Amino acid sequence: MSEPDTGTAGNGEGAPAARRLEVLRPGPLSTVQDLGRTGLAGMGVGVSGAADRSSLRLANRLVGNPESEAAVEITLGGLWLRAHGVLTVALTGTSFPATVDGRTAASNTVLTLPSGSELRIGQCRTGMRGYLAVRGGIDVPAVLGSRATDTLAGLGPEPLAVGTVLPVGRAYGEFPRVDAAPVTPPPGGDLTLPVLPGPRQDWFTDSALRALLGEPFEITPDSDRVGMRLSGPPLPRYETSELPSEGMVSGALQVPPAGQPTLFLADHPVTGGYPVIAVVLSAYVAVAAQARPGQRLRFRAVREPSEY
Amino acid sequence: MRILPCADAGLLVELDELEQVLALHAALSERSLPGVLDLIPAARTLLVSLDPERADRRALAEEIRRVPLTGARSAGTGSVGDQPAGGELADRGLLTVPVIYDGADLDAVAELTGLSPREVVDAHTGTEWRVAFGGFAPGFGYLVGGDPRLEVPRRAESRTGVPAGSVGLAGRFSGVYPRTSPGGWQLIGRTELEMWRTDREPPALLRPGVRVRFEEVS
Image (cartoon, rainbow over all chains, first blue to last red; front, side):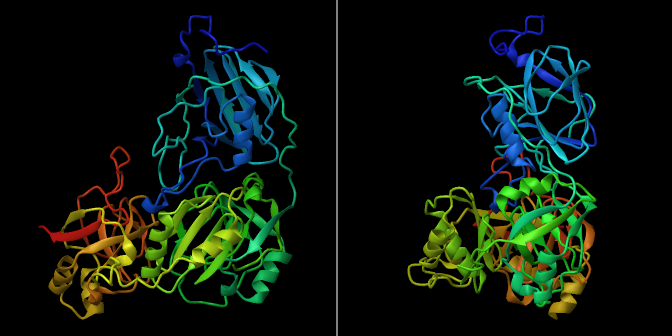
């Protein structure tokens, strides 16, 4: 594969600074995401960033970017783009049918988009989210140190729309030797996620924890980057007083009074006022973020201390 | 003190009162703790958010338990020995917030507190408040140090759209809504100050440690 970053695009498109992606169709929700904002919780700003962080990291590695570079997070597909300047890109996460000027383009490989070419990303059959990284990164202005769109806090760039132009940054560092990564696409069907009970499992009855660990929970359509509303057996509370708001983490299973849990994802609120019965282990939050409405989640408790 | 894990993503430290939370937050802020990404104080808890690949939860829990919290006293009530009050919150200056006291719940607050609306306004403007912590939304600060007579419960039903700039009361806290959002606080007035702007440094006017004076304007 040729090195596309040395010199100009060769077709009159000009210097690398002019390299960009133009949105022809945005699909249901496409946003710019990186690894988000840390250390700003004191101002009420959450981390946000890619919902499936491991897929974002992989996409960046494939095109030789730092893992934290901004890329496009594609929800369910339907994103069509035009390249201006020759661009090196990679598509990871869920598996999309994709074409470059009509020719099939595989996921988890390094792709070259000739200047003027059209990348059309169709709808995925399993999974929820894919990542399109471009060598040099998506170079929109950072807000509070990150280019991520926080859909809850209203921070960062607007979701992609027809005509949105995404500038591409200058590439640096060596181009990687790998040009394909062996990755299994997200599975359909039931998923089992490891959880650690708590921090507030003592606010629930014993039967609530048994139900959480014994029964499946279906992902409802009321799910987004903030969290996934789940539907399953009710998780009754033992302690019925009001919980003073407290800090929340990604992967938390927060239970409002109605007894149906919400699994918090990337744009979750910094603090919440309902008790968390259990938390999905960090490495599996990305797995959860790829599950779609109608799929069922099962939770398995890991053996670790529930208090230090 | 209880230290409750949030799987491998955090340690939720539960304390008896806000003053201990602020003292622990101040103490941990000064240390460089491997694997700690952020500290998120709230009314009775401090969430220590962790990088699961770098944090040793057991060692961190031990270190947290060793932090002395005995100097903590009520925020805004002066000093205890050598310790500044309010859990050693760094002083980040005084912000004057001009308020038009025409909030939809002013009469309800008067009724709940047994004060007249005039006395509610005088009590709200009569003390210096201080931002203890944030969290509800970017730019929202939970203010403490108010007149104890102003302690009121949240509204029984929250509103779906509280306008930006609304000044409210809930529990022992006061706060200003940085943007239009749902909310259940008792609204006593409004300010035209823009509490949150990302094109300004710092974007939030109300940050932990900022002292606040409310000033009545018409």
